[in-house]
Image (spheres, rainbow, N blue to C red):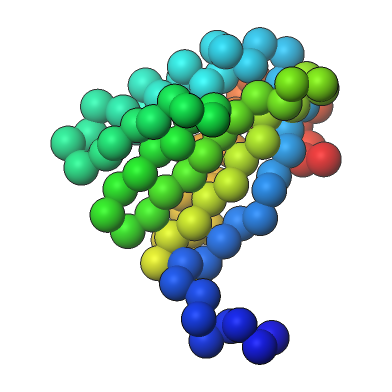
Length: 100
């Protein structure tokens, strides 16, 4: 890939999960991350949580019962750990525990 040398972060791509109560699941994810001292939370377009070495955005679809997750981190291992932690919370509140 031509731009690979310029990619700053490892990215999950968009991961969609079918969720019955989107607000409750987002609140659970917020509770897990927002209290940490090195974290900032922005609610402009869904919930964006940012730390020095990673960030993620979790937002509800306007047209489907989905939560959409995008994760980026300095390396693939960190991104995978963060992605899996968030998805464990999200999928605990899903109608179907599979991503779409």
